[in-house]
Image 1 (cartoon, rainbow, N blue to C red):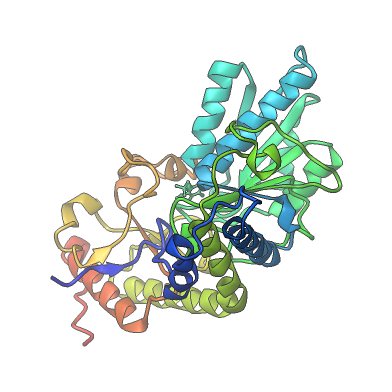
Image 2: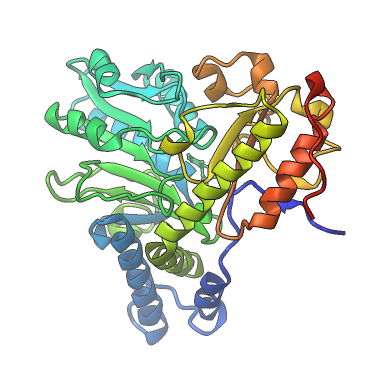
Length: 395
Ligand SMILES: Cc1ncc(COP(=O)(O)O)c(C=O)c1O
C-alpha cells in the first residue's frame, strides 16, 4: 500500500540516513558507558558525546558544556520550571515568586506552569498573544512585577508557525534581571538560533524535529554572564555534573549531534526550499479554494515549514478524501486534542474555524510533485463546498 504524502514535519521528522549511519556504531561496537572513565569503551563513548555537544553548540552558538542532554523538550521544559522553583525556594523560602508565559505555548510548558501553580503555589501570568500568535516587548513589559523571576516564551509556534521576537524579549528580561527561557523545539535547525546574540538563560529542544532520533534533546543552561545553576529535576548518580542523572543515550546523542551538523550546512537551503513550497502550495490552494485563510503570520514572517490553513468546511468530514496526506489538525503533540486547539483560540479563531484548520508542515524530503499532489487532493476534497473550482490531475 502506498504511504500518504508526509506533510507533518512539525510533529516529527524522519531520521536522516546520514544520522543513522553516525549512530549505528554506538549500539554495538562502541557501546560503552561514558560515565565509566576506567576503560576505553567509556572513553570512546565520552568523546562521542563531547563531539555531539560541540556540533549542537556550533549550530546554536553556545558553549558545548552549557548543554545538558535529556529525553527531549518535554523533559527540558519541566526541568527549567521545576528546577528553578526548587532553587528559588531553597535560596529564599519566604520570597513571593511570579512566572510569566503566554497562552499559546506548547502543552509541556503550559501544563508545567499549571502544576507549578497548583502544587508549588507559584503565581503565573498567561499573557495573551496577538492575532498572529506573538508576544511583543510592550506586552511583556505590561506584565512584569517586582517579584517576576522567570519568563518562558516559545521561539517558533508548533501549530501556527509564529516567530516570537526572542532576541528583544530576552533583552527585556536581562535588563530586569529576570530569567528567560525559550522553547526552541521548532526553531533549532529551521531558523537562525544564535545564543551569542540572544541573551536567553535557558533553551530547550528535541532532536527529532531536525532529522535526529526521537527521545533525545538538550537543555541549555547559560554558565556565563550570568552563571546559572538550577536544581536538577532528575536525581540519581550525578551524571552531567549533577545537572541530569541517568546513563546517557549515547547513540541518540551522537544522532542529535550529527543532525545538528547537517543542519548547520544545509539549513539555509532547506528552509528556503520549504518556504518556497509553502508559498506554492498556498497559492495553488487559493486559486482553487479562494476562501482559504492562513492562521498566524503572513507567509513572509512565519516558520519556513509551517502552513496552518482554515479550509471551507470541517476537516473531520473530509478525512477519507484526504487520506493520501499525512497532516495534523492542530498540534500532534497532545494526544487527546483534535480540533479544539488552545493556540487557535488564543489568536481569536472560533471553535468552528479550529475544526476547519489543517496544519501542513514540510521538510527536507518534500518535493514539488508532492506539493502538486497535495494541492490537488485538498482542492478536490473541498471542491463541492461553496462552488469552489475543481483542480484537475497534475500528473
Ligand atoms: C514547541 C514544542 N515544544 C515541545 C515539544 C515536546 O517535544 P518532545 O515530545 O520531543 O518532548 C514539542 C513537540 O512537538 C514542540 O513542538
